[in-house]
Length: 222
Image 1 (cartoon, rainbow, N blue to C red):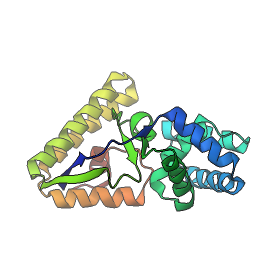
Image 2: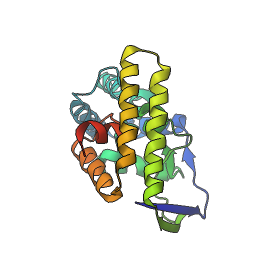
Image 3: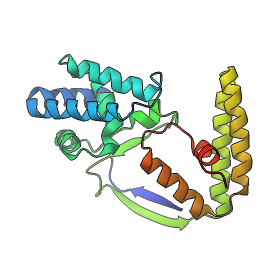
Image 4: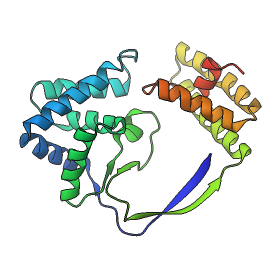
């Protein structure tokens, strides 16, 4: 695992949610085929999330977006659903949206999933596009086994604290699982194997809501 840092050489213009929604409305209102492709794209992704809890924030966001576009609306709910699905790489849907934003001088948008839906609660996550000339790789270094292990430990412990704070019986059980996960993570010495396990699981389950600690603890018993 490597840590890569970047240097911003030119200003990156990030579209606000309001501006992104407005841009999506303009695109859809002038291109019925795009609207149909967007609707189909959202419905396909949503159907693949069938095993997820109906109370999950990502599922709710997708459902609200689909309900809106099925009623002929292009609003913030549709935009949030599209934003969530951008990593799924539907080139027709994504490229047209990015091109429309680029035509207005933007080259990034807020990552709705990482900021609101996934539980990461990232402060300023961005999805950048057409920004190759603005950002250059600055440095690359290999992380040590200790750094990787410490990172997993901190994430698992932080997740446990969040769950305990909800003060439910189910949460308490999750907290215990989190403690067990931390104990097991401490014993993992082969970082390459651990990373490969996580990558393979997430590739097979792209919509998983499990934390890295839960995946390692519950599905792979080393």
